[in-house]
Image (cartoon, rainbow, N blue to C red; front, side):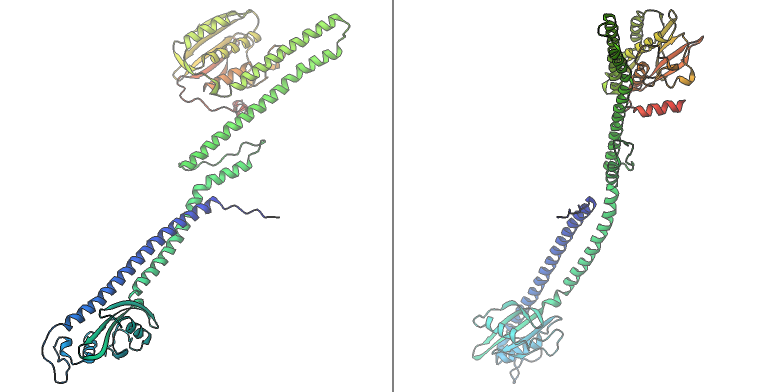
Length: 504
């Protein structure tokens, strides 16, 4: 069975890429520098060898007079081949006068054999290097000009120049050889290259070490993201990534956390919706099924009564589904159409619509002449829900007032009744779904009216509060911020419950 290869981490790949680029860069710079220095050294060596040729030719054509009886040049005489009786004498004088420097050597060859070498050896000796001598003899056999070349010998790599020397009337053929030890001349360059290589290696280690920690620091949010993603399940969506720093990856962390908040909110809404549907549809279905099972098909009156009960329960389920759908769509500001709402016009319009509800005396108490940012249709819907709730829970014929006012920070839309009121202990529960103050099941409705009002207020960045009406009753007020520049993110149902329980 083929084994799965362990993936290479992004950290290792990034550090490896950085090291590869740095290595290539250092290698290119080092190689170019070494080649340039090497070529410069070769050029200096060639200039020195050609300078020897120029020196030898200059002294060989000095044209001086004076010769000792022995045929050798007297001290102070120029090295003029015309002043020497033979090639042998001239080469002997040339080797004696042109003393090699360090890493240099010279030898005078006569008829293919090494004849003279410098007495003072500041450089090295090539008079016994028969392979080099044979090579030079072969290269200068049919030429009269100087020959320059490079040879690999037992003493190392040598750069040499060979100058043929002949004299009319002398059958001997001489060669003056000047050689430079390339290894010795290139030793400083080689040492510099070795030092550079060592420094480059240390630099690569430093780059790798620093890069490993820096990349690890930069990628830590991604590792946290991976661990968080592994920890998140449908049953637990509460895990979040730690937010730190202010770079692009930290921004991504905050974006992912915001996405998880929205996802958790959506899942909470779906769960709440399913719980609501399961909770509230169970009763009408049970009622309809029980009446159908007990119905006498032969009794027209029983059939008619069962039919009416079934239709009534189906109507109630329809209203319930509509209320649940409305509540689910109000979990955030995405479905709102935000405009400048004239609060005075909105208050008068709400008073006109509410005034046709029978059984109560309706009045518009106060009107705020100003504007607020919001969705006028949703705000009117919330106000009508408050009116419907007040009409259900207050004695028939009692007065109910509506109105609007404002302070320095909020616009208030309120509904005031003179009924039994809402006990302080129950005020945190009336905005829950399917919850009624005092558990009044004799009142018709889905139990979602005040929950819808609360959702509309929160979608506008506001809140809903219950207070006592002077003389008895309850006043429910929608608080809307005067300036709503940034509406809040969707509020999860679980957070709302915890907030209200904390108030309790």
